[in-house]
Length: 527
Ligand code: CA
Image 1 (cartoon, rainbow, N blue to C red):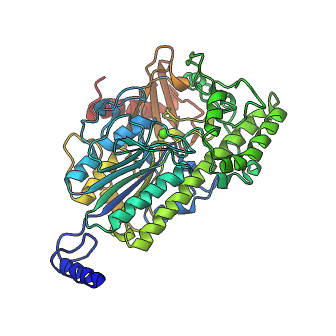
Image 2: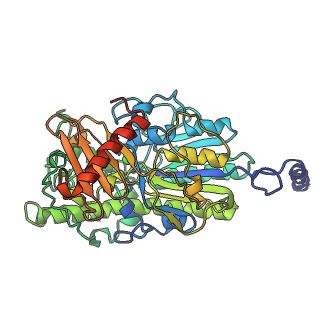
Image 3: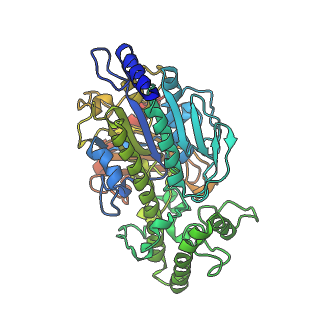
């Protein structure tokens, strides 16, 4: 009887208040939004872009059933500043979060809060890394800081929870599925920020990815042994695979190597308590006995391999393969879990009216220039993956070469939700591009700026630059590194040949110098 009256009541409600997902003659229903972001995910590690490294069938679904952005870039290639740029729709100099050390001002405008005001239920689940209580979020389950791969600890709406016993990508996804189930029973549209920790350093694979992992081999980039000729800032940077921590990064335990010989990008960290081997062992202490049993044979073989290769000419290639094995296994955990969520959207009928975005806070080096990490305006970290699916408006299997920026995402989502962002938001809606009508006046060049003090992690000199579809100009303003770099990306896609002051590119150079001045004015850069 109770069920019958529920049905009657539901029928009654439907006749007078159409549900958000129902088509009728009135304004179209507002789309739900599932904004998936991973951390440090290079385009080259998604098979929708290239399958030279990994198969990511679930992530590829988003591109195959929607649009793949071939030229998607960030405005400042480092974690928290990139998240601030996405949330605020503004460059770092205007949102204030210029580097990982500066605070994020939570009182500023963000697109999720605007959606909340427009009637959306908003949720943020996973890693946000902004060390501030974000406004405009109804349901918050966030990792503390970087979070842990195993036994992660979450803060739920202000309360710190007990550590979960699982693997971070899976636990985050379990929470996301709970939130989606709640959304499925409500007529309120949702904006769910589903933000993964993986594949951020230190790339600890899930136990299911450990069997066979050490037998995998990946193609070696042609510039793994880059000598940085004509690029002094690149030569100075501390982000070479050759200097990675053998413990934390490559998983050699104290039974085989102690202390850790790597700099790991921390040349300037003089704290005597800084001991990466202890740090790595503390992470292993987070494993349950069953997880530890799965890790034990893996750790033993890694240690034995290390003793064989260390100090030999094979060491760098071994380090590269070891890094890629763990990085790509972390990507697989994201792919698998995104698949669970896409399946749920299908089964629940939410897929048709849900915009699904997949992106990363920036790209990453996978051995190019001998590096891991990000920060530089070179392609691998300037780019970020972007795929958007929305069956109601976006043709399946479409793609675009338009130059797009991470600050465009908020404006795009607001556009589909029928909300106009404030005038000072710098991002531009991608909606016309998604609908197959790239505007005539779409941007032909993009501005970039990296701010973090070079005497901190990874020693990357501050720089700014401009990129067109073919050419890129970078200016270093740091004392000791002052100067320019100019690249022809068509003939030199790996940016090995700095062509600054090359007479052949005289016109190009002058044009890019001018463009930089114009773009800085347009973007209201103070200097
Ligand atoms: Ca990141």
